[in-house]
Length: 319
Image (cartoon, rainbow, N blue to C red; front, side, top):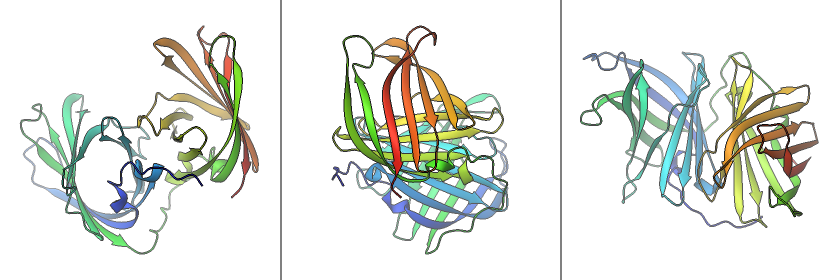
């Protein structure tokens, strides 16, 4: 296994299992002092040796999940955090920020909306110990001059995995990918234009699911290429489509998604992007299987009339 330089361990404290006590303000911006209290659990894991942090929350009294996706930008040296609620299956707008110099607290702020009105949203972590942590969310309707706290979580570490939620399974589209795979890569150089050559190399990935299959995440190791890659897939049960985002460890960004779905064992996912300032369309093709699977990426410069394949992966299960 390749040894990678650890970029950050900011959220390593959250790895594992926690019981979580929640307090939520009944109504924001209404001079409300009534708080709702309930209990839940969370399971957290890091990827890229700490550069990505994901925790899955379970709300048993509500019959729903929540998930935080945290991605560290090694150039800007700041975190971006997206929230997903299983009742909507949408990525909320991210908050951005960093830890204090002494590492005892973290504050992140981002633009959002509430009932159609623009607001600012903040997350704040504090009181971190080996067994406990404290988190608060606040809103501002005046550009950050004043803030109203509306959600408080107190974390207490537990030794065993939390019980599963008894809710209907929404999809199993990417369950085939769960586990560990080796894969052989063919990459076109350059990705567009002539002349070109194919660059070959081997890599490995490990995949898991959250929300009982409605979120799929894999982490890939590319030792000869000097980077790691992660894929974050989010299922929309209304449109029955997936949004697939790529994360490169060197950039620490959630890339523009491709959108699509499976027909039988073939998945087609497309979306707009740009390549060095040139507008392009991107297409992913998945062919799923139990012990063998394949993936292909193509670019189009003519609105999808023609496609140039530039990356092939052939996967073999190893675990």
